[in-house]
Length: 194
Image 1 (cartoon, one colour):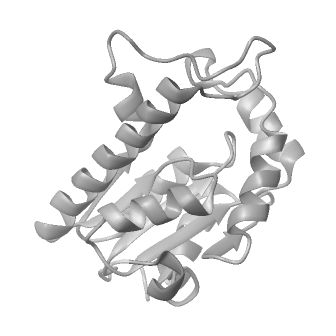
Image 2 (tube, one colour):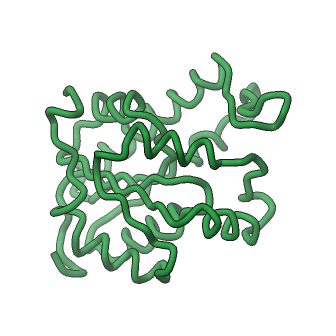
Image 3 (tube, helix red, strand yellow):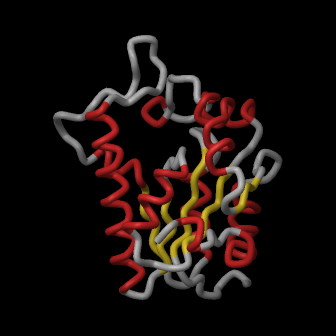
């Protein structure tokens, strides 16, 4: 596929904080002729009051039951928006942290757009930490996401396309995704259980 061609299905870009999800998903959407970016974080920001604390007392990522419920609500909304765009003829480029196979199966069960293409941006942890540390305070995370990276690798390591973008400019990563995602990132329906 080349820049300017349509990409059928839904492209889901994930990774740890600092992996480049937001920047790359925007650039990918800009390179497609009809695309919309659906940012999973936006659905969390929409919660004006009553939002769960996703960190435990030691400052580690550890959402309790209410946090898990709200994360699931984000996924439901992300899938609905992605499908709405797909049904209108736009390629949805979704950007969200997906940590486990169970979460991916939940997304696949809600998402009607097919094929589901999963791109896991996986620059070296020190690169992701540096990127996180140098971004604006309001978008920076203050917890250690090394456990998230390990769990993603353990849970999703055999699915989708694991793309080490550590030495690439965001534009290069976006060009590569547009060119190769249809071939390298499709998650088989048999794995998704849907």
